[in-house]
Image 1 (cartoon, rainbow, N blue to C red):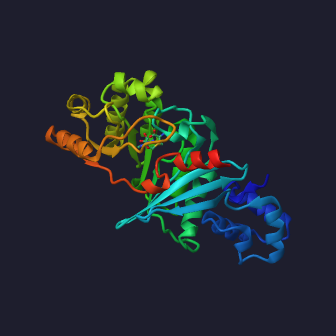
Image 2: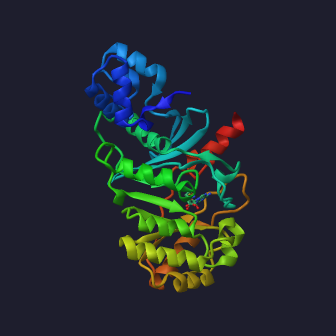
Image 3: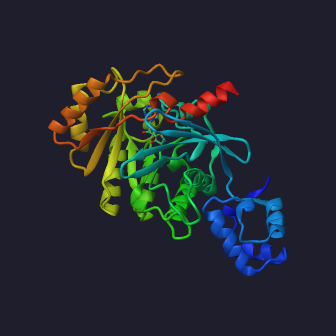
Length: 346
Ligand code: SAH
């Protein structure tokens, strides 16, 4: 299998170029094109001969878009293929303030959340940092970006996989994408969503990144949480909230909690009161999402009016809460749904 240029350091590339009859500065040019997702054949500033030698050993982007589906509301879902044939997915949402891309951190997932399609076939493998980066680069290019141009303004690590279960590669990716040699996306515009791996949340806080931490809470207590999220058995909710407090104290970044409303499971007035007790002392925001029903899982989303009723309840208790606009429902917008469909049909 060919190696991705994104995984090759400038020094290594300089050696390769020199051994192939090129000049040192060619390596920097190749790197620049590659860092913006351009393929070897497209690097017009080097000779055809050097391009041919390079393309025998390297590809630029290890991620290719193999399917693109547009929703009625303009949301786009992408199916990506990796060099080993595995597929992952991403979603692009356009807002008035910019474009947000949702990307994957693993092929599959081993966290086993009962409502989530990503976890259906278990974890296949972690993505490398260049495979996470490659998703952003290929969509940026699909949007017509030239070298050094950024079309995507915000990133959310909310696609398939548990980002904190692939900690090193995810952090490496965040440092790269927010750096001057890449798209330079501000860390403040990057959200990482986790099902709540407590130790890793402390580590993230200590690593000093400026990203938004989003925690998939989905329940106000361990009893309900364990029914829908197996991870709750090893990560008690109180410890999870303590780690969120630590994250806020250390970074000054408001923590966001995701709460998917599931009919008859987590949407009672008692649940709202418990959330107030749990989160009342923390600088945080609660994002309510009506659960996207997944065919393979028999959990139903709470009706819209109930989601709004629950939101009003939380706000009246003094919590900051909004209902997240659902986008791309007609194109299997929820986590792992498109990949699940692709695997079933192929
Ligand atoms: N593993 C990470 C990130 C991936 S999931 C995490 O757990 O946060 C991104 C978000 O989508 C999570 O909040 C997850 O709980 C939510 N999600 C998954 N399946 C969903 C569904 N069917 N409907 C609504 N939200 C869903």
